[in-house]
Length: 391
Image (cartoon, rainbow, N blue to C red; front, side):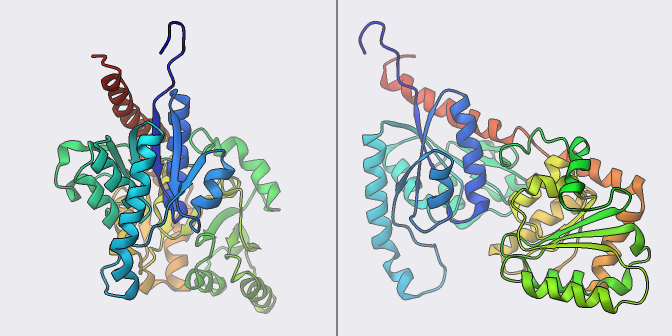
């Protein structure tokens, strides 16, 4: 570097793809790294959510071939070693070509090629685990990582070398960390045509919805003790929206007596607005949802998806339930009566709801992205100093 020439910032390679639970935290950490003065680029597949979300957010995405890790023998499993070799070779080349100083993986099968390439090139690796139960890709990566960031207290015990595990929390999407629910509530209620004097139950099952959860809330009309004080904001999922909307129309028209105010949507893009309108939330227990509920301090009835890998959603929900921030309703017990029985006490009791909300808030880590970014930046700057011969 010539005299007066500005040094280029260290560059980090990130892998977080496949699902929103991997992509959104990786994007939040990438933004925090940029704010800290580092360059960030991504590796991902052409078919995962990252193929759209990463470029849309303005980041460079290097496409690699990757396949899910599976414990079951199948033709795809037999092809996996060849796919991994090709992808790892590709990422190894990227590390050299792009002068990568550190790598950060967020789990999912797209993380594996970067993990193996970082090991091959001795590039410092930081792992972030969103769930209470680590996934297979992150358990593999943790063997060679210099730091493992976890989201849920107690996850440390699931890794062999606990000295390298740091509790950071799960990064939330930009805007959630400093979002003021109370100040936004009047506008949020107006946005969904809801009434300020009713308590709001927000129900959703993710972007695709959850049919069993939809059916439980659809069948709930006969079980509410004070339906005139209740309103339900229901995001049913795009695929199930028409069925659920028609179901609500039929159920409300046929019900004899007071009914809650119901607003049914297929998908709510501005989830922060929905959260601002909500008093209690009934939903699945994915890692990103858990992070948002705790950062915003919302009590919840959590219905873990029963087929999640290693039943990690149940572990996520239990961590909140043990703290008094949520109630765990197993999918097998989900029914209209049980959904009402768990959510109505909080809807009708302001003091109990505030207590649960405070317990949720105590678990929230709005600075999680910055915490993870500090681990990555420290490794990247140490690598850059070593390459330049600085102490």
